[in-house]
Image (tube, rainbow, N blue to C red):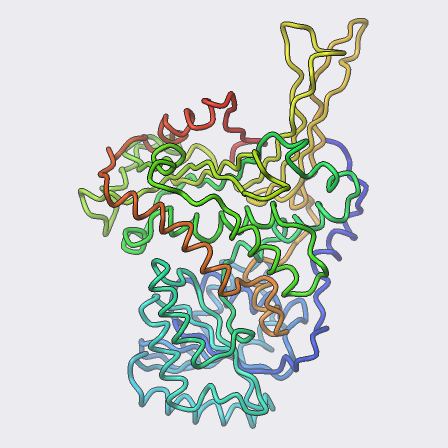
Length: 518
């Protein structure tokens, strides 16, 4: 591994230079619907604590968690303390915890009960006076999708989204709809209450450090952008694989599958950031506009193309981490004859001038032999003119953006092997950002909450991004409905169905995975 020229202090500063540069006053009350849920305890509360430790929470700020279980404020704070202790990137600092815990409150009511919202409105007015938050609100919907429109309608009916001199924002977890038609219905209901600029649709991948670094790598380095096109790039592979199965999410996964859970949002976001044109500026709308152009240029899948270029799989029983694990159909809350896909591989083209002819290979799956999310840019091979003997081929140049679990950049070039003969070998330059002991970069939800406080929606998906993504995915789903798959078709712990390897092999390529297996 080569030594990078960044100092660790520079990296830490680059990862933590948050500041409230947006003119909007960040003072507000954060209302979390689903306050007793797993997302709140594992991600949101630790993220708020991390922001408190980093002194990034506004001074005039409070949190109200809403749930259906009966708890006192102190009971709930005790549970939050345990969650922070288990999941925060910082150890418990009593001074920071003391500042935060006094500002955490709990309200108990059913999300469909109008009376609960009336009581919530009165309680928030009291907190406004106590914390001088001026009616500013962020409503975080950490709930099942069927409650999204219900909660938004109740907020409007009780005057909690009045858009006076104060501001109100809503943060919505995925999935945003199940298909294009349901997404449009949901969007219509939400936009009747909140303006587009106040709707923060979450794809937590956009909060990851290296995902934000993609544009920096491309546009802040002179030697990349001139070759970032079909003249020099052979193919791009985007992989996001997990070693675990569906665990306790069987009920949710039965309704989504890999197509809706990963491809419609995470994977297409990775693709759009990789393929986008240089934006006119670094403002929110300029960046989003270029991402939408990519999504609107995606090759539309006909039924013939789906059969040819889309592979789906489902894991069966197998060996993972040295232990026998059940197949998907044996998981909790999964139908014994389920045809839900846990793996997808597809070949897609971006049909514009820059990328014409360059295949983008996308792969995502559960119960794979490694955990990794990375983007691999494989450059075209050199002609066999100078150094390569007739019976050998030079290794291609590779650029790898490693997103998780390792965060960093890998670059492969060719060089002469020491010795008297001219033997060409690949040389790897591997920089791992989060391998540094003194680097403690912000978590995705920490950054997303911070940006929502600032009113900066760059890291959130605009409606037309969601719309184009669903249009792309619906064509695949419609074709699948006409054909029953032969599931399961790969054992747990394997690399996926053999058809996925054939997908890339028919063009003389293979799936690549760079780095040690996690």
